[in-house]
Image (cartoon, rainbow, N blue to C red; front, side, top):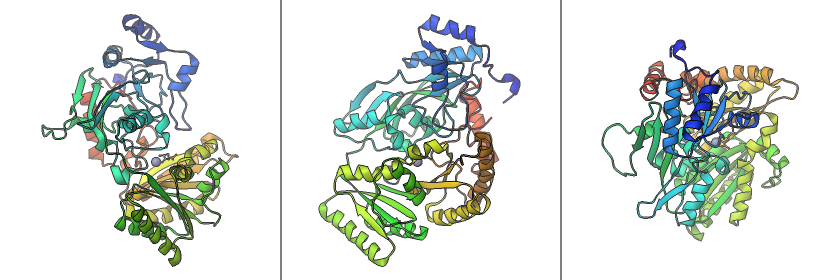
Length: 470
Ligand code: 2HG
Ligand code: ZN
């Protein structure tokens, strides 16, 4: 992008003043709104938005985009702002376009098994609505209560049930978007089969607001699963983590296979979660199965007993009710919140599932050798090779010093990722956080093509400029 061509973002006040007066679009410029809407859940960045717009319809979004093109104003599309890669941060005086007021569930089609809603509907609302109507929306993660469906699409959200149901990408049946050219596109229109050329819908999924603003989403719905049963087991080595996974998945349909360490447990229990058992262990795995029948769960319990006898598992617990299952899930899902006060520096990487132990062992050795001052919390969706690495900030380091040292870790880690042919972002996205490291996972040719694709959809470079790549 030619620097002289960049949207000017600083002296927009008069142009902003013109916009709502013309179209009645809500605009906020008070310091609280700028601070709140200018950021997401990522730490160590500073919000610097110039205004927040809250459209109520796709037409209003189109008006905003056309205005931004005319006035060369940078826009940051914004959902529930639960992202962890600073993809929804406005750090350069951009104008935030919040989809929050577009929050209606529009239609549930029981025959086609689809639900159509505005992009600003909260994930949990979609899940609840589907349940109330005898269906199931299976994309799920800890921030379900705040994240919005449009943001899930923009980041191709993954979460805890990917091994069973896949990513958001698999569940988007149709999309309405406003491109950076101001065009309204209706993509795929809920068709199951559609062999008519490039699937632009898929291009928008995971595009992090750089190609268009998603305004309406139609998701496919699944049949609701029966009650979930959760196993939490303690183990002392990583090889056991993989062995247990192999054994369970050869006999059962696993809905989730999650891992966390003793350090993570220390924080979640301090935060109020009940320890699963009193035996100490270095690693914990959480397996979720569906109660297909009582015999099915008995078989799984037998396998668990066998693993205990063999010494692969040091201790474990099986939920006896949905309430207990939820309590066990809290041990894993509360990690982010329980460590938040330590201002963690986060990484979210993936390698092929079979290579997780090798990667984790190598990286742990690097961290212990070079940064013994860091307390590191490892956890994640181990069943899909996705590890979350949270380095907690030592109290005696300033935010800047801490981030600088973490960048040193990043270089090491991403070189290792490159060697393992993994990804520098498994599910949190690129945003600002992974932008400098994108080349470790994507070739120069791929990045160039992505830039050219952006130019087609956003010729004036107004949509989330500076995110993903420059
Ligand atoms: C999770 O799996 C989220 O809980 C957040 O992706 C991960 O806080 C993190 O690093
Ligand atoms: Zn995650």
